[in-house]
Length: 161
Image 1: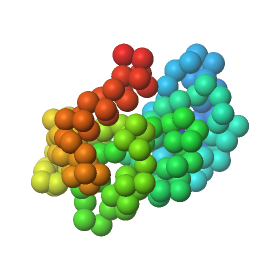
Image 2: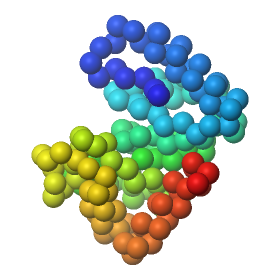
Image 3: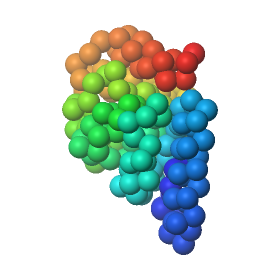
């Protein structure tokens, strides 16, 4: 769920309305949300403001923001979804990830898109998440197994598994 302004902004108001409805539904039913903020993170945060400081939680899929935005959504009880983009040379994600706790990170794919280095340019698949975990462990100077176990536990906590 979310707002996608990548291709077309024609139905922006409708997307805002539907997103707000989905957030209300998730909150009422105590369901975590997976938020897609493609070219729309500020707009998403604006719609979410009335829902913050409630029992609503979830993950920002393929988080597209900066450190300040990450801190804001983490402080509101959300996780930051990190995928292959973390490994890209021109990505701002390494800076973002260095400034947030491992307890706030979920590892994910955007399969079949956004394959991590060294598989960039190939069709992404779930097994490639290990490359993201490896890159993250080096970036934050944390044991690979700890990165894997902690981010897995984060997912279990979020989805009540």
